[in-house]
Image (cartoon, rainbow over all chains, first blue to last red; front, side):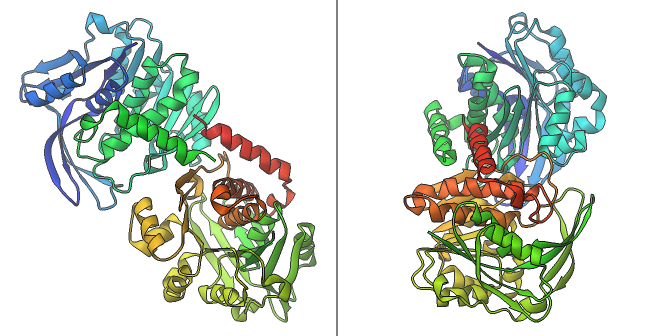
Length: 299
Length: 299
């Protein structure tokens, strides 16, 4: 089955203590779509300007991502610039030029509307709603978010939570949303807001699932060096949904393994700037790290 | 086989946002010895003053801890008072009265000197050295430490590292000691300082082993509420060494499971003030949580 992914498509200029990389392919939809593409067919919805490099369109196509839903508009592509501190944990935004993204309204091509798996990657909750309104009974809907929407679009987000099967957020967002420091207490409160599956991302500490079959403690893949963590969260949820959309059996039977696959794609994402490393990965490399994670957690 | 545990024996007055608990049984040796006692025979070395409550001696004895090495001296028992902030992550020391602990020199009774497993729980590195000097070819020596010794006794600690099989420390101490933010890079540097086994504790994020058979990613046991984390690290390493000292087969075959057992004892420690919860636990409760951790991490 295919997965529909809606989110931002952007150019990211990323500065770290080691290097500067201008105008890389970025955005939540780009990272998530490439991550999902390792597992099965992906339909993407997004918007770019007329300055969007042809090589990035070619990169999407190399990953067999369906671009029928990618709007190309007069104007500039969303451009984000950010800087990481030495420890790669703190990120500072240097510049945000919304360009054509400012007035983006996701339109679903007819062939997209019956996608069984829907990933509402990080984007304004109002747009995430707008996508769901165009869908015909999706099987499994997951949304990601970011602190910005908790601050400026909380009501939209809370309404969205009631329409989701799964909700993915990081630990500080979970704390902000629930006022709970304890991650397990926070997940309990998040279930009360709607979603049956709650996944909290903890960066290098892995992630935790709370679902109908209880919790799953998902490790991070051990990386001795992080080059650029931008897009790791999007890669995680993209890989997760890509795997789920093609796995045999129901969500409950596959979601743990799906998180592991998402974790592994996210680990590759961190090993290069933007999508540089991820787009060089083969499925066999992913499977190798999944097997490694099995060995690393067995006792 | 038995495990020898040397460390501090103290009275802890612990304040949290919820409650105040004066003069609980505390200290690294107390927590570690009780934790190890669930698995096999424990020999403890420490010092208390003549004010040390009889009920705490009875508590050690209930856990069949060999107290031949517990010195009772004229004067006051080491008394520590501390306060936790709302999120239980930040601890503030309110008072430290060293009492008889100030001039403590660990003396090993003859029957202790051939203990195959030695845990040098958190205590000044010079005293940890002094213990090793009295030992006859121990099989497996592990030390714990704290930031204080990194600040005031770094040379002693670095010399100690060369005499250890295993070294246990938390993530911020590992960072301080190696100047590495990345935990896997830090473990590599720590191996170069001596120990074959390095375990980094990450609190509610679990712990990581680096050893001859590679890494083990050890989860924390999920706790929806932490009452008092004091002694959790000591309980972890105590449970680990207790399990190892009685498991059949070599260290490599058992160390992962030993970490899991340590993790579970530490989880009980966090559920009560001081040793209140730990001392009410039965081995069957521990085994139940170990089985639960297997289910929580399987994929």
